Image 1: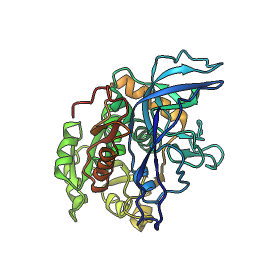
Image 2 (image 1 turned 30 degrees about the vertical axis):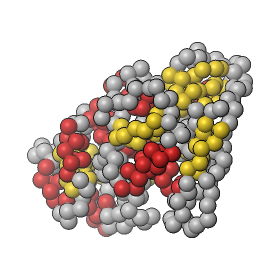
Image 3 (image 1 turned 60 degrees about the horizontal axis):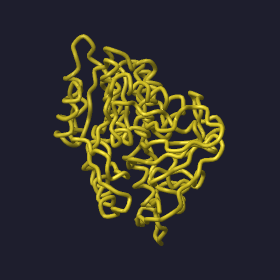
Image 4 (image 1 turned 135 degrees about the horizontal axis):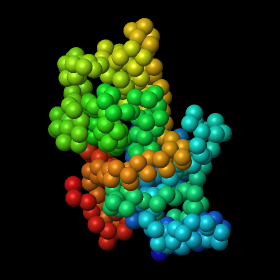
Length: 364
């Protein structure tokens, strides 16, 4: 019998509770008209999944499979499927309800949700051996990607692509100076890889010198430790003389990023915020107003942006960074260990579950 993984409801207040993982058995599903059956090879964790276990994320389902990122193979197609997908390796779209509007979900977000433990889409989630989805919810996987790398891409790749390429106001081009904060997280690493491939000069921040060193190996020009009180001054000293300012910042933390970054941003520079891990509020300082700095919110992206991102990864042969893998949906202890890595901030890259125990684990 195929397995799928959910969270089990227990009593406790948001932020204090920690829902345990629950392994469930089911029957192998059958695709209907316009649908495909995907046998999952690998799935990956996101911070959203940790927030779900802590009841810090809205619209939680205790029936739907957990996780949003997945790589698998189409093993069966339903009537009317127009694409020759059977036997193809695919990536699953990590969200629903946003087709192509560059401004945001077409219905104002009422039906927009990341899949995985979502009450809006209880038939979707990638912590499962099999999943049935509409044919429009899969994209052929770039051929150079291993299953774990493919699973590492969807949600962080989409989020990074929109934040960097769509929202920085044309600054994601060769020769521009981009700051990516919090390097080591999945979105930040994808933003780094995309920016380097586009020819940008990339600087990073981290709380760990070792992570900055690894980012430099991946093409970053340099970085600063954000725990140091004068990191903005140190960053200013690293910028090239012929362009001694940042053009844009891609940030997932919030906090004091505006007051820090405004000191090194050009007039009219852009700060794109895709997450606020420091807290739910940010300060807007008068210096940013006087310098005409723009602060733009960004969250995930549309199906069109997902397709564009996957095509770019294929064209540039980008390999998403995998921090650690465990094998098997039934390996509850091992999967819990991945969550512990995430809690402690130990990972550099994505944390992956190899659902197909026979697939190759990437060399880290």
